[in-house]
Structure formats: structure tokens, C-alpha cells
Image (tube, rainbow, N blue to C red; front, side, top):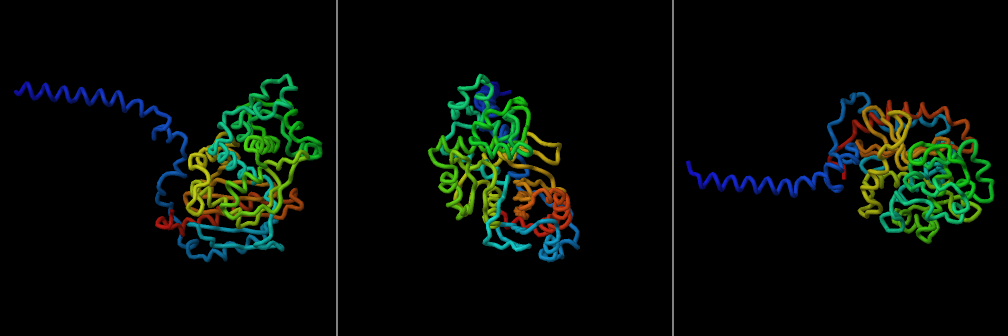
Length: 376
């Protein structure tokens, strides 16, 4: 037995063990480590695409236009656009709608606001999602004895967990006819626990718009044009303002359907559009991570919804009356749907019909025509 050789081997193994303990273990628990990222990333958005489930040859043989044409008779739908692998495959307009006509996307604009908040954080205008709203509204919150409101965070607003009573639905009319939308929203009572209870309210997203303006020194529209819309050649045809001149955060923005599709492409490509990074991929992932929801089929992140469509995950923006921007990362696809919203009350019943038609026909067709080689 060569004692000298074995002694050297033992010293080498001890040195390797020390290196592992000194370097490897801290790495495993580092916030930037891959093991930690796996907890916040959604594999369907970031992992290589897995083999698709079996698709019937019958659906694969259909022409996409044959499957889209019946949507004309589906409730109030007036446009549907379908893209895959960055190519617009189908673009249909009904009921007087056309490609150059801008459409009010209602609360689907909340999801665009989510992107803008991510950009504002990355550009240094905001400290982060844990920043408290008391920093931005001293003239309103200093006059209130309730310090819990000042401690509401940007994260709470993004996830509809401010705890403030809603300004939406039955309260919306009174809110938007008030002479100060900011004061009205902040004066709503705390009917939930901030950071815990989800209470859907456009008041939350309007506060985000005001925060963005006050932090950046630009109107929300000017900020959006500079960092998002102009780089994507998107034109906002209309956007409401409050009595103080702040753009309405999360409602009444008008875009043409092709520009809505562009937002979907940006989300699909992890914040990159035409080769230019506009928002970080980390923010995209964080935005679609479920935080609250109504069961497994309808989860909510940073102003984005999530649900399953058959075997596939779908991230989507939703606006009253049936305005949808749907992203299917596993299929490298985007679906845009708009509806007539002059009488939105009559459109609520069509949602299940829309999802059924998409799940039955369109999404299986996209799965059958998915080509891994075309994924960027």
C-alpha cells in the first residue's frame, strides 16, 4: 500500500469538500441561483417546448379560415386575429369593424399598465414592487388617520390586494363622476387586508397610473409612448383622463386589433419586440405568476389572468364586454378578440361559448400546426 499516495488523495478530497461547502452551498441558496428561479419561473413559459399531446388528423386537415368563419355568429364578436410563430395567420372583421378602426379594449388595458410598471422599475423611476404608496400621495394620506393605507404597496395594487373597497362594477359610475378620482379611491374603506384579500377595483390601477406619472414626471401616455408604444409602432387612438388630467389606469384605451396583437407578441417573446428588449423577461414571468384567483382555472398575477385551454396554459388580458388578448406560450401563438361594447351588459353570456369554440377548434388547430423549428 502506497501511504504517501493515499494521504495525498485524502488531502485532495478534503480540499474539494471544503470548496463545495464554501462555494456550492451559498450558490444553492443565492437569490440569483437557478434553484431559486425555478420557484418563481413557470416552466410552460421558460422551458423547451415538450412534445405535444396527440392531435386528431381531422382537425389538422381543416383550413384555419373554415374554423374562424363561424365566429361571426358568436355573440358580439367583431374581430378575431390569430398569430403563430410571429406570423398573422387569420384576421377577420365582422359587424362593421375593420383593420384601421380603433377599439376600446376596456380593462384589458390593465395588463398593458402592468408592463409599464415593470419598465418604470427597470428604468429606475420606481424602487420596486414593495414601495409604499404613501410616498406618492402625501396630500391625501396625511389627512387620514389610517396608516395602513399609506403602507399599501405597488405589489398590492398590481395584484388587486390593496384592501380598499372597490370602485368597479356598482361603484364605478359614482367614482368617475366624482371631482377627484384619486381622493375617492383612497377614501374608500379598507374592507380587506392589504396584501391578502383580492378585491377587483379599477381604482387600484388608476392609482398605479398616477404613481407612474408622479415618479417619472411624464404622463402615463407620454411614458408609454417613449418606452413601449413608439418602439412597437403602436398608436393610441383614445384614452380617458380623470378631472386632474391623469390618464385612466386600467380602462378605456383604444387600439386597433393589430396593435393589440403586438402586445401579445411582446409577452410571447419575453419582453423583446423586433429584436429590441423593451421589458425584462423576469418581469414577464413575474407578471404571469398566479397570486390570487378563483380556483385552478382562473388565476391572477400582475394584472394578467391565467387559465388552461385543454392541455395548454393561456395567459390573457380581459376587458369588459369580451375584449381579449390571449397568449399561448407552448404553442407560440397569440389570439386577439374584440367585441362591440356599446351595450356590454348583453355580452356576458357569450364568454363560455367563446372559450368552448377556441378550446374545441382553434387551439387544437394551432397545436397541430405548431412547428418547433419556427420558435424564436
